Length: 254
Ligand SMILES: [Zn+2]
Image 1 (tube, rainbow, N blue to C red):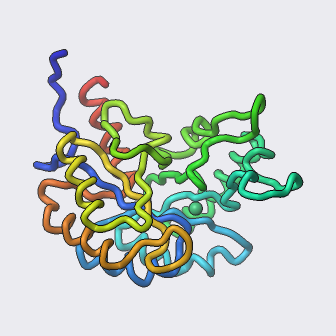
Image 2: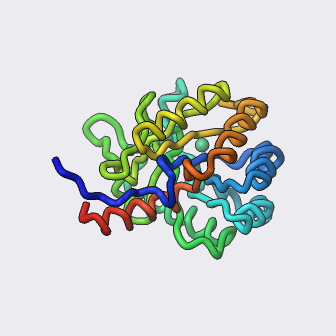
């Protein structure tokens, strides 16, 4: 096949990397955001705007949005599988319809737009990486629901596969969970993206905090590497990379 595609990534960049953070934990504000700001790198933070006082609780994230980071939608209720619990009366994705899920997604987006009023586009993050409602004969993907309301959705993929800009499903883009991952492994994944011109997405939760946490030193190693290599590796929020891919596909008739 003869390809005459223009390069997808800006300037001389050979890969795109998105750093994504779920659940809006305090260590993200305390450790990750200042480190990223110092390195002039922008990331995506997926928040759940819960409770009547969500504006108050999420107030510190307004400044994060103003610094150029993306505020992303992680739903209001963070619906996960009820199979996490040993309780047949438990509610969860298995007991939800696509209409239930859509109602939550739309409301979460409306609330988060108040936190990041200048942000043009917003990506979505599947709670617990799950993209279905119902179970067995009633189980249905809610990826099409996300596609109605968001430029992109972040799910989970397999090691070591990144996303090809020509073929990635932007509404279930693959990411690598980075909890407890050594810095050298993250740098290795970044270089795997360079080798294949992939879009690589890393998923973080807390730093030295909560479930699925990672270490500050490992995160610093990655940030320093991305900063030192910014002319060959484009680090950008999910919505921004998705927008670039859509424009590039249009330019190239893909
Ligand atoms: Zn989450």
